[in-house]
Length: 270
Image (cartoon, rainbow, N blue to C red; front, side, top):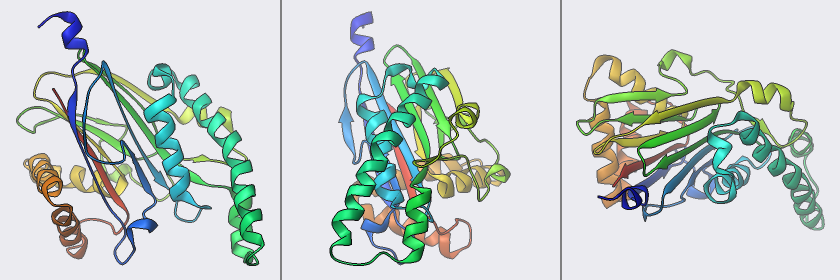
């Protein structure tokens, strides 16, 4: 294969997401890019996952805005330069605040805001952020703020790398997030994590929101087949999304997985 051809490889992307138990799909506060399973082509494949903070103001739409930016128009340097990553978020925040105010004004004609809604609005929207770029030349890069994770496994589903967390004990109730109001940009910049690695034919990548990421890392400590278990669950869910929902539900009921929105993006580079 020529160098040019190699750099224009694509891949198969599976996207699956399950809301909290008892919640409707529209209440899911995770967001993925791409938003649904697809075949991908091009020299750089962009993936993103954001997990909206439940007690912030309209976290789901904010998470969707973030992943759209990193999946489509964000600079390629955003996954290799913490300053560029932070600048993408700063611009998003600057545009998001007036949009929220406009939405509130429109809704104000129909109803009065509750006191707790006003408090949330002042604090803004918040989410964790994970952006990944996989290049056809065998290089991949990632930038993360918070506890959404990317996992690289080889063709035999053996783990190669976990980023930014690799220990289930590192997940807590207050991960780093980007808040759309009153963000401390210097502090946020210092909390951005970057990674640059290589991938080989047969490797696959899993981007996972925190509940799923913590589960698979904890499962791997006692069951070396955890990654194959996740891979097979994604295969089943790609064929029938209800299968993945059942798989997640079984683990929630067993107490093995926290009841939170669960999202996974799997990329198999071609």
